[in-house]
Length: 631
Image 1 (cartoon, rainbow, N blue to C red):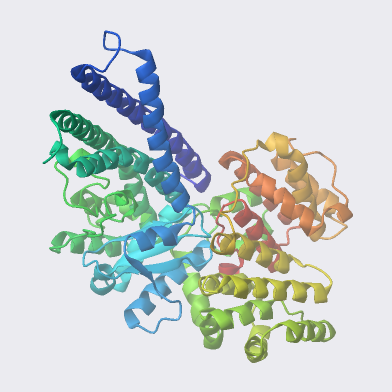
Image 2: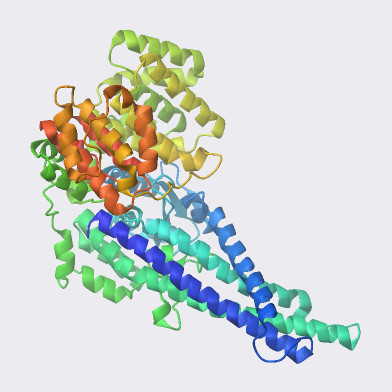
């Protein structure tokens, strides 16, 4: 199953989740009404006869729905800031990108390699300091706010191969859209849980109906309220039961898929199987002791709560079954997953894209989206090893990371660079200017293929800036580009990447979700995007390149090439904002058209690959850096 099919499956699971949630809410509303009706009838306060009383049902249903909706919306809003909120709620602390702890450094290196190979910015890393069990999770709404968290037990007890297998499992959830579904599920289930909490606090306030003073009427009223609270508690926990059932239904099969993906990523089923075996042999297993573990149980790598009385409520398959599927000696499925991808995208990715044309180029690119294999991982590890240590160290420090990114924007023409450095000197603090001066020489020697990966590496450090520091950094970048008097392909790709992946941290409100749109209704935006790509290849072949891309859309896009003067990067940016609302099938078709446009002249430069990646990233489709293995 490819990335787009998995995304479509995630959309179907989301719709199924809403249906299951609606059924659970309907059951809760009916139960609350019956409890209220029986209590009022017993006290003689209910008017009319019979079980069904329409006015009472309407009021009870409205209040119950309001409580559930308020609880769900509150939780969803609190999670809108993404993975860090979830990690901190479970007792996690951020692992600093420049940590010198050997164990933390090993974890950070594994996450960095996996992120660079995937073509996404490095996620923030959290450590659950107080958790002795072996467990991990990935959380967030997008790759821009994703976190990878591991327990202290996992950090100390797992070997590097085992840790890589666990992190690979979590990256599968990041790449396949499982994280967003998990967050939605947590928000919805909290609304159900609120009913039980209301019942609990009602019992607390009334003291269970006991009263040491007051008349019999007051005691009777207190008893009735306490009985109502008890009924709410019972109804609430029935709702919680069905909520856990929904968690299990949504989560179990995804864990098998993530295990299989992790084996494909690492080509080492023994690593992941070894981690699962250690969980089975550890007294604390994979248990998470945080008070919030129950609500987040569907996030974890392995079951994070006490063994359930009913196995069908478990959010994870049994350890023995997962190990059996992964064991190299007994699971042909795991061995098949470990084989290199048969898509033909493996060797010389950029060269392969250039050698293909039309449908072949489109197939190569769309098959690469969201796909990560051991060759990608090896290429990312080799890139990290080959980069000058002063650059990788700079990418992990907030101050130096700003200078690093600004340095990547410097023009290679001496006269332009002088204007840019003068613009920086006017607005930057002396320490950034000094760092930039120190990094200019090593940055000048960086190959084009390493530029965006370096930015990906710097994202966690940039997230540690304060809002005023981030505002100043953004302003300095704009001044550099203005001094250059043009926005090149790399500058556009860099701006898009940083804007998308820092927005959750620094925007005043969570980023807006693009409105759903069909590709046929966004044909003008698709035509503009393909035209911009066609003009990038040169004026002589622009018409032919556009035709090659438009052919992939089967007549959806207008046949005419948009004039070059109308294809500015600001217009492309607006078009991408609307195209982000396409369904997975529409995004597949659009990226296929983009690949065919770039490959029409059978030449694919590093700059064009960066632009393709920026387009894919803007559409929420992680694309491994095409140039890494080709170089």
